Amino acid sequence: MLLGGRIPRHIGIIMDGNGRWAESRGLPRIEGHRRGVERSKEVIEVAVELGLKALTLFTFSTENWRRPTAEVATLMRLLEIYLKRELEGLIKNDIVFRSIGEIWRLPDHIQSIISEAEKKTSSNKGMILAIALSYSGRNEILRAVKKAIRSGIAPDELTEEGFSAFLDTSGIPHPDLIIRTSGEMRISNFLLWQAAYSEFFFTDTLWPDFSEDEFLLAIQDYQRRERRFGAIPVRADAS
Image (cartoon, rainbow, N blue to C red):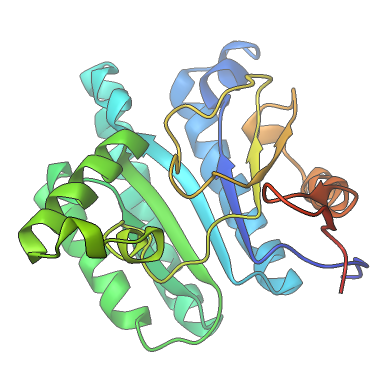
């Protein structure tokens, strides 16, 4: 795959539109989620090929617990199937699997599968694949504050860099680019601290239809941006 210019180190994706995709085709919502899982797999493969350092997928928010019980149960089942089916591929492709969010709220067997995937990929050296599960950016920041307090660090000694170490994403570079599908133009509580200087790409495309070409288009759009970081403009594709 050829793509000129600088590749973002870290891309976050708000994968939205599975339900609407299914409903527009007269299908059960779960069919949209199934297709969304397959699209996630394809995007992960492209991200690895491009050489990304990290890819974070917003998979299940804390607000998603309010969905119908049957839909939540099916989403958990799809997550279980994906992790079991793809674990060997993650290992083979040298991917480091990470989960962020309130993992303790997930069913016990899902927690065990996640723990196994994290353990078996922890020594890999390739791209970090972070899956946001039962995740809320505000909640993550609040939990980080509590961790910092419990650590005993003096308030005057706490820096932005030090605080980042208490976040779920500790050790993962902040996202250069955040993509949101389905036409919604909001961040929806995703990586609030980390996205302070991220570039954003919004598309009307529903997640199950988000193709490799559109993924590359989002990156090319990013490469044309001038990233200011509150100071001197820096082109995203500058060397």
